[in-house]
Image (cartoon, rainbow, N blue to C red; front, side):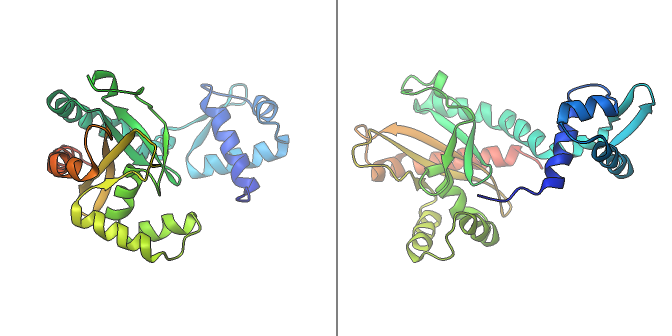
Length: 243
């Protein structure tokens, strides 16, 4: 288990407490965070010095400044990314029937940000929004690992305890050659996923997977039928996205 850096935990606890109200006194913040009053004072002084908080008055206490909005830039991009991708994904599902899932990397896993499952006539599961898919076995995760930068891939694998794996390296090379990845599923599983990366310049913005029934087609058939359309979809989304 990763060790928690206590000063960071305390600072974040204070930021969260301040974010839940328009302003707060030192006493109120100490009570809510269970931090000693002198600690709250020191942390507030630091936040003020860095521009993340300001003192409203002695009576009202402190409030956050708009500088904290900069901490949410990544979240705002995810919202924008979904807005850009959704119309393209809906058109794909209307044309081909199968449900699509949009995923972005999030702390050693891929998080589902949007899905056309509710609109798909061939949907067999719920939209699974915010569901986290394993990065090593899911089609979304394998597509991301194959097409992200070497440094990002090395860092992600190192976080998972993998320093070097020749079989994984070969698998990622094959995915880059084919242009798409498949989920590693148990033999008895009735579902399969094929995923492509949404790339802008050399950066992977996210990935899209199409879920299908294994009884409907094999992996080879899915790649031949949908590999090119899915990559065209990813290119259209990347063309409309801006960062």
